[in-house]
Image (cartoon, rainbow, N blue to C red; front, side, top):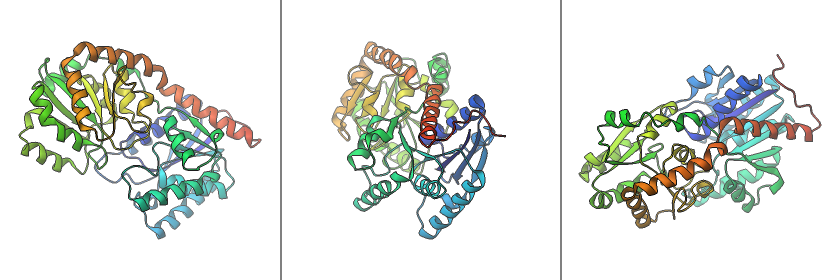
Length: 394
């Protein structure tokens, strides 16, 4: 099969890791020809370009696909996308993210190419201005007829789009964002890692993994930290990731006198996340919006209990009082209580972690994800009366 993926940028992030993993499996497991078209990975979050280059795909970086919106640049980006797709002549186009997803869906539609779009997180969401919310919702309504099928990384994403009048239920398939689960099952790095961090075995590490960026929710943890450490002096918070708000957060930690209770790792490659996860005792997720953050199943596969805001697809893996605690968005009183309860109760942490691992190991296995994606491709091609070509056309 000849497949073209299009995504706005390849920063270190869940949607991007999902896309690159899918590309790798297309090539390595199925012998496909794959083109990956992306904009530049601008910003401090890190880049997946090197990993994509090693995958064996035809990597095309288009400066016009920069994330920021500029009307003249969008016209140029659309023309370039259409030109690249016409030249590549894929059997199917798979689009990701808002900007690239809209432009590439239109280009595929104009070229009469079969097209699948993945919703990694809703384009219109909590935290946007009213104008941006309505513009993105209308853009998604307009773009929906331009693709054959929509993949959602959580049932919640499909429900949100359907509630907004975007498509019909039969056009949606939920495929959870898979990853290599085996590294997350290995607990052996824990002792050495905590020694590297200068953390005693009886200290409780509460970890937040994600970009230091607006709407990611680190400010909630900074707000509750003084109360938590007064009640549980052994608690230390770990921020894994980097971003534009790092200096601000470091200043706030110093002002609160909490330097001994916070550890900021800075940017780490995705390959390091399984190891770092083993150093933690509790995973906390306070993003204001997110399709279904990969850190949730990654934490659960690692055997860690999770405290998460009850947003989007979180409840599909964080079963309240079974694999962790679900907290209403911005309910910082309940957030404090949940962290303190887990910090004081090692048997509860172990029980939640074990149940979470049982739930998520198969559900988020990477190979299962790519097999399900391929099944969607085959259905789309069959519906168009086209053959589902096996392997490469080279």
